Image 1 (cartoon, rainbow, N blue to C red):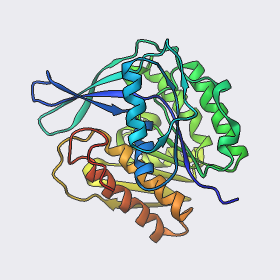
Image 2: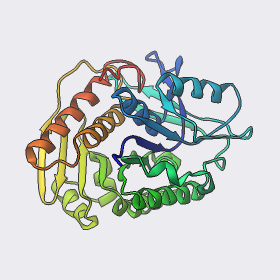
Image 3: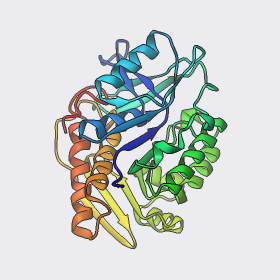
Image 4: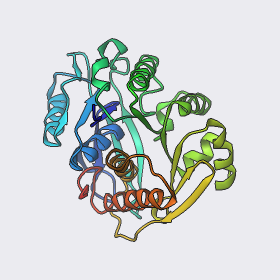
Length: 303
């Protein structure tokens, strides 16, 4: 059986994106790292499945409609009247850089549980993707571990994006320990440069990469904003410069980068040499850069 498709597990968000310099007016957009990646892979023509818990109110209806527009299969999501969709207020500084101002999470215990997972869904899938956005919640953590187990039994590649949002965690130490505990399960890991330093408790790129090597992750990609990205595998460490664009909003740039990586691994397989690894990283840089040219995490996903 030829494996095809990407499963994304996480939490749907509403991004309230500031549209003026005073950060007082907002545009409502579908967001959340795992949703962004599911949309990105779908736009690239890959079957995309999203797993999360949804509610039955107007906001959840909006989420489902947006997922449908993106051709994301939400058949395996669970719906309950008690669930309220999370929200995040994203403010912009004068340089167009985004920062997460505040979170809304009215029903933190309403998350997908392991009993809601369908093991047979993982058998034909080629890649399983998850992030750290729900790992602070014990039930969600167990669900993620169960999904990883299903993926491994099905020989499905596992991709993990740290995507750290410290405001959601009870402490930095808990965040660090939890994310580090998931690294050994992944075939592909993406980290932002500051996340590398945070997780490895280092201050220099080479020191962080060296310390990260103890987890023996097959492929690590480290994004460096507009500068570009590094790709690390089996002692090989390459730098691929970014491309220059007129950046408006960096929300979702890392998710766009991850979508492009997943696409390359899905369509072309494991990179066989430095040349192919460079091609994957260059393409991810391009997609990530294009995503910054309009407001919102999906609006400029012209890939």
